[in-house]
Image (cartoon, rainbow, N blue to C red):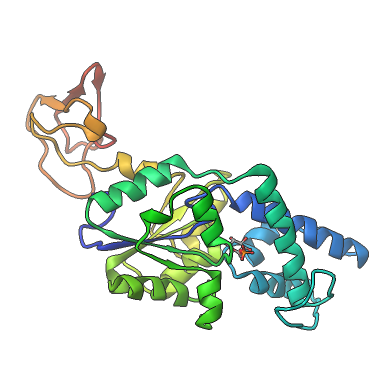
Length: 298
Ligand SMILES: O=P(O)(O)OC[C@H]1O[C@@H](O)[C@H](O)[C@@H](O)[C@@H]1O
């Protein structure tokens, strides 16, 4: 069910790029901030694909600054969290990026991915627990702005991680804290992540399933998510809902109240996993309304 193993008891969702369309806002804020900094030093600009994915995406704000600067062989003083945006320190650059991000959020607004909201609702309807596990210290504001805070039983975000001194992704600690908050062992949890650092954290924490979410669909990011720890990769969580299949009986209703599939021909395929339809095992002809074909994506 839900495209997850039957043993799954809880789902841990990353925020930016998984639930909300905010990864692009973060990326823009990072590029604007780093480009101004790099240009002043005569350095090549920030690459919004390679640099973002490898050094920044999914990491806590200050970790993103440190990891990217290290990749360019640049070192800055740490400073303190009280540093203003003008400070030439790790915390100062972090503050600059946050000012830009908040401007972008205010100007452009935040959108949810409807397929993700449908999926979270389906997960909860199936009795599974849910948590949002994000590196972002702006998680509360983003969730509230789109009205989905109530869909999660627990939240481990950048603010919580800072307070509890949890190492950020790619370390597994924030996801493990999410699982602990739901009182579900990691092996019974599914992690949903769009960032390389995030799927790495999922693998490092030995979670039951790590679902990579490939919003780029460029033929590169999906395989990279797999290489970094995703067990499966989807373009949108709605794809998992579509795989919410069982071999229907003649009276089994389709998902979302659609008419049931019926079959003709024989033999009717037996239940098995993975779905045998579309393989030589399936000799039945399945129809629903005017549609004939595989019942898996019901
Ligand atoms: O700056 P914030 O809102 O605390 O977010 C920290 C990080 O949160 C992650 O979710 C994003 O993938 C990163 O791009 C971002 O830098």
